[in-house]
Amino acid sequence: MKYVKNLKCTNCGQTYEAVPERYLCDTCGEKGILDVQYKYEKIKEDWNKEKLSQNNESSIWRYMPLLPVIETTQKPDLRIGHTPFYNSKKMAKKLGLNNLVIKDDGLNPTGSLKDRASAIAAVKAKESGAKTVSCSSTGNAASSLAGNVAAMESEMKAIIFVPKRAPAGKVAQLLVYGAEVVSVQDSYEETYYLSDRAIKKWGWYNRNAAINPYLVEGKKTAVLELAEQLNWNMPDWVVFSVGDGCTIAGAYKGLYDLKQIGFIESIPKLLGVQAEGCAPITKAFKTGKELEVTEENTIADSIAVGSPSNYKKALTAVKKSRGDMINVSDQDILKMIKTLGSTTGIFGEPAGVAGLAGIKKAVSLEIITADDNVAAVITGNGLKDIDNGRKATGDLIKIESDINKLEEIFYKKGVIDV
Ligand SMILES: *Cc1c(COP(=O)(O)O)cnc(C)c1O
Ligand SMILES: [Zn+2]
Image (cartoon, rainbow, N blue to C red; front, side, top):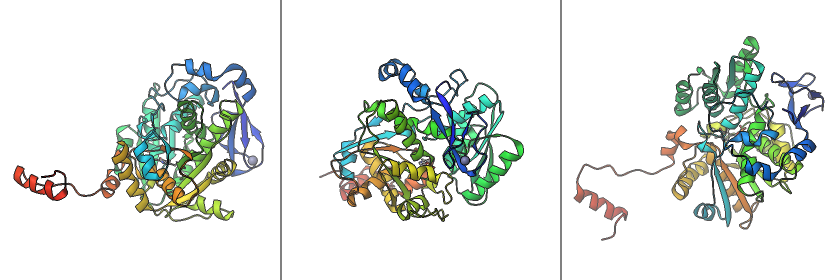
C-alpha cells in the first residue's frame, strides 16, 4: 500500500483514507463511487520496465506497485492472471482486420477475468479481519470469489447470491468451491438488493464490484498484462464486453496508470460492447442522457445487467479514451462462439466473445478500419455455459458402428472425396 495516496469520490472529489472497509463516499452515498489514487511520482522513482521484466512472479502480483493491497498480506494460492495472448491471423481475417491480438482470460483459475478482482477481494477481506465475504453476481464474480476464498490459507467463507438464470456450470463451481449459495428467484437487480441488505445486516466483507473501489484495481491487471505482453506497443483499440461497466472502467484505469508512470505513451481507444437485449450503458453513451434501467434480455448472462451501478465510471472510461460503444445481437454472439472456436481453439462463453462480435460490427460500420491494430480480451470460458455452446453449433453425426454407412454419410457431407 505504500504507493496508495487515498480514495477519491468520483462524484464530489472528497478523499478518504484507503482502509479495506471503505466502500462509498459518506456525502454522496450510492453515487459516490470511490477511486484509488496512487503516488505516481514515487512509483516512477522506485519502479521501471526493467525491474518489472526481472520479476519472476507470474501472476497479477507482479504489478504490486499499482495494486491497493499490503505486500505481505497472504494471497489466494492460485495463479491469477498471466493469461496467454495470440496473434490469430485466421480470426483477424474473419473480422476484416489485418492485425488482431486475442487475450484468453478464460484461462484464469476459475475460468474468467473476474478472478483478477476476486483475488483482491479475498486479500482486502483478510486485511479487514473479516471471516465472511459476500457478493451478488450473474455468475462469474460469484464463482471466482468462491474459488479465491477457498484458496486462502486462513479460514474464510463465501456467501453468494445468484439470480435464478445463472448457468448451471457456474452454480456447480460455487458449490464445488464450498460457498454458501443463495439462488434468488428473481432478476439480477433484485438479487443485488437482497445481497446488499444481507451484507449490511451481518457485516460481511462486500465484494460487489460496483461498490468496492479495490476490485476495479484487480480488473485493470488485464490491460497491465496485455501492455507488457505487447512490449508496451499499444494497439489502436482495446475491446471489452460491458455489463456493470467495472471491467472497462478498470481497463481505462490500468492504461491511465501506465501512462502516468511513463510505461506507455498514449491510451488506446476503448470499444465497449453490450448485448442488444440489455444495453443501458450504450444508450446513455449515445444519447448523453441519464441511464435508464432496461430488461435483461440476452443469452450473454455475464453482461445482462439492466441496472448497472458503475455505469458512470464506464462512460467516463470510454469517453476519455475517445472510444465508442456498440451493441450486438444474441445471434451475432452465438455465431462468434463458433467462429472463434473453429479458427483459434478457444471456447468462449457468450459474454466472453461479445467483444469480438462487436469488432466485426464496428468494422462493418467503419468505426474500426482494417488497418487498425485491435486487441480483444476473451473474458470467460465457454465450458461454463455449454448449453449456449451447443446452440451455437450444428448437428453431429449420429450412427451405429457401421463403416459403410459412415462412408456414405462422409461422402454426402463432403468429409471425404471419392
Ligand atoms: C463480468 C463479465 C463481463 C463484464 O464485466 P462488467 O464489469 O460487468 O462490465 C464480461 N464478460 C464476462 C465473462 C464477465 O464475467
Ligand atoms: Zn462524494
